[in-house]
Structures are given as C-alpha cells and as structure tokens.
Figure (cartoon, rainbow, N blue to C red):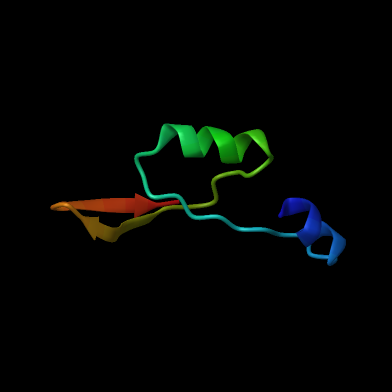
Length: 53
C-alpha cells in the first residue's frame, strides 16, 4: 500500500495502532512510520481503555 500511495503523489500516510502492541509498533517503525501523538482512552474493549498512537 505504501508504494501505491507514493505513486498517487501523496507525501503522508497515517496509521493507528491500539496499544499496547509492541509487534505492530515495531512493524510500522520498520517501514518508516514515526509516532506523532497518542489518542488516550480512544477505545474500550474487554473492560479496559486503550490508547491509539
């Protein structure tokens, strides 16, 4: 998908990851994504609030 977005002329691509998820964070960082911020308490699941960077 990253290559297709570049071919379309876009210069930014954004992703959201429900935390904690070390594997997904590592995957995204390995292809060039950088953390810009965190939405705290963005999702509620199984009795817990989750953050989304």
